Length: 202
Ligand code: MN
Picture (cartoon, rainbow, N blue to C red):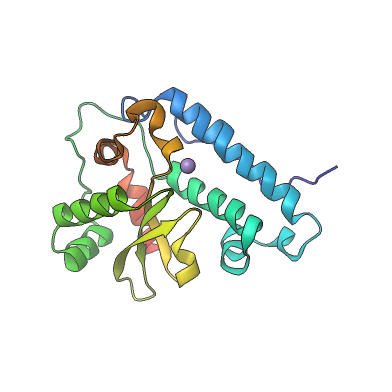
């Protein structure tokens, strides 16, 4: 009997709420099957080890191999799924954040919100293979964009993860097939900037 230490996050929106940007079918596979598998794997892997009582961020910072891969994928997906809000066809597209400390920092560190978006999309489009692109902050609040392969997360570099693009094919293949760039461009319409600003300022 394996003790359940880590659990699947509950989505703060209905499974069809992100359509047409992300379909209900993609959510059902990505959250309900891929993420569930990482959760099940990690619970088996950490049982009886030093990692079983650690928070995810700490496991990711200290582990390697299979434990790192599964813990990293849970941490990454939790941040990914919780960064979205229901699609609103009436909202301007892409939605820009209202005035916020995060927006001020984006303009300061990238020149403009449009320049940030272009660099973020470009890094997502050019990351070879599977992985994640992150907007992250250092201890002084300076923003950086990092490309992380496979299960990587900028916490391993001492950075705070804020916003991410999942460029594993399972994130977009049902809806966009091979068109990764089109998928990444569409995501701006469902980003919950209040949540990203909260992560930046907490
Ligand atoms: Mn994924």
